[in-house]
Amino acid sequence: MRQLGTEYMLQEWGVWLRVQSGLPRYVSPSYALMRDNDQVARTADPCITDEMALLIDGKVCRLFARYHDAGVALWNYHRHQAMSYRRLGALMSKALGKTITHVRAQELVMVGTAWVDAAVCHYEEAA
Image 1: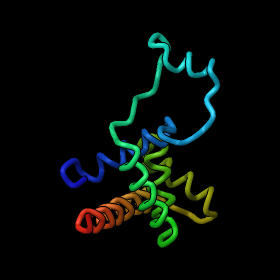
Image 2 (image 1 turned 60 degrees about the horizontal axis):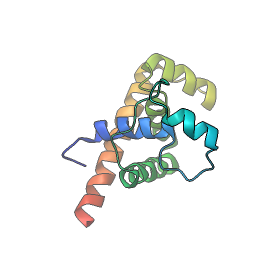
Image 3 (image 1 turned 90 degrees about the vertical axis):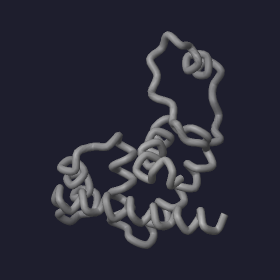
C-alpha cells in the first residue's frame, strides 16, 4: 500500500465504490450482456483488488465512527469523483446541519486521508 500511496488507493477505492465491484448481488442476465458489451460506454474499472478495497472501506468506516465529520468528508470526496471542496462543504452543511466552509471541508479530507494512511501503516506492520 505504501508503495502506491494512500491517496492513489483512496481514489481507486472511490472508483470501486462507484462501480460497486466485488459486492455480492444479483445481476440480471440482460444487464450482464449490456455490461460486457464493449460498444457500450463504461465507467473506469478500479485498479484495486477487492481485498484492498475492503480494507480501505473498513478503515474509512472506523474513521466514520471515531471522527464523524472527517469520515463523511472523505467518503463523499472520493465517492463523488473528487468533487470540489466548495461543493463538498455545501453538501456536508446540508447533511450535517452545520456550516462547513470549503477550507474546513479540505481540512477534513486531509485529516481523513492521514488517518487512513496511519491505520493502513499499522495493518502493514502487523502483516
